[in-house]
Image 1 (cartoon, rainbow, N blue to C red):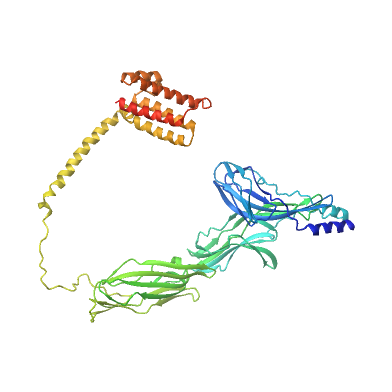
Image 2 (cartoon, rainbow, N blue to C red):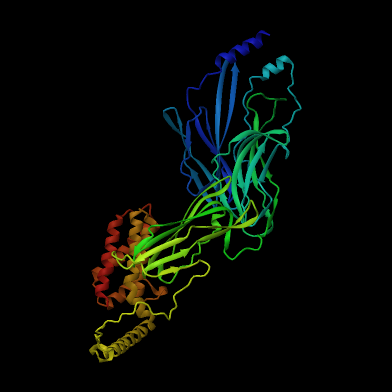
Length: 616
């Protein structure tokens, strides 16, 4: 009994002890396959206020962080110690083979920042059978072992980790309705239900919703679990995603399954009993929701004015001004407001009289997404310019939609629209009044003549016919001359290009210059091997093309003989052969030869330029 009291007092007096030194380490699997998920875990003995990943270029972050906490209590020779461990787990994936480095992460604890070690992962073509390289089992000393042994308890010596069933962990896709009309919205909610210690997710495959227009409702970035009663049982429930769906077609549709690969932490048996502290393992389990059938009914026979709007809407029409001068612009805004499938509402159709010049409308949409659907306003702004004076009564503008509450088509109308157009600022008599209806606009016939001018127009011929102008003949002569010149030039080019040896000889300088540019690039990068390789290729290639020497006969002796026959100075020939020797020696024996790269580059450039001027 005294031993029990002593242990209890030591635990209570030391429960708030904090380690003096911060330990921040990273570990990961050493190998993984292309497209295979692997874990990287960051472990700290102090809780950070924030943690930021280092550079992981070339890798894709699939999920994370999932956070777990464990405590390790030790009593050795009467000395009590406790260490808390905070583990942040991230899931990565690579799409190509190679060795990738994940730089050290940064954690902020108090006012100080700490950096972990970096980890290297080799990505192979085939998947690797691995436990992600991380020992999920925490083989820590259990301070309660002596207590259980002393008290004579075996603590469920034969106990095994509980098997996780579909009642312990599952995912569901809920919809607020399964029978609706085409164009009517439904809400789809993805939730995960858990009775186990859920610590993270490896992969989440959401439904594709191929037969629907999809609008995502904003949800928290992290999945937070809350207590909730489901089927008379209490679960930890997390909201994964929430969507507004609008059926694109009618008939029997299916919402696909949602599949989630979960990480679950379980206590495991250690030394014959289930430990109170620290002994656990992380396992993976894949869960999948059932498919959901949706019946989408075809809309009833629609009137001609219906354009596809389903929901509850209203309409308003506003003009910038109702009295203007001829040729003044007028802005008319037509706004549709309410709740429904705004993404399927087409440009509002309005008929205009021919007395107006009308421009394409500018559409603007201000819609928000929430659990009730799409709510907001869609506006079309028309710019019209009256070309004739008068009072134009345009009638009422109308809009037809299908009301999901009454299951009927409804039409909303604006007030009567009227525009007065004056000839000038002093015009008090607007002239004729024109009455229109949107169903039957009275257009002015193309054969009608309006506002005939009876005054003397004093028309005069103010141009000279084109055939009588001086440059008319040159419009035929010049194209003929240009065509003849082009034919002569092209025929000459064809003859020259037929001689392949001559073409290579003329392009020898340009080819070598391209090689020298690449060599200069490698020189700046201090890549000596590639630099010497490009210099050698430039010099040998130039000699082969310029001197018309086949590759099989391209030797230093042949180069020297041919250059002498072409009256090339002997000093220039010797400089050429000498720099070839230097580059070959440095390329094939880099540990022995050390030359200034810039000098080699300048010498090669000067030699090729000198040969270009000498050999014609």
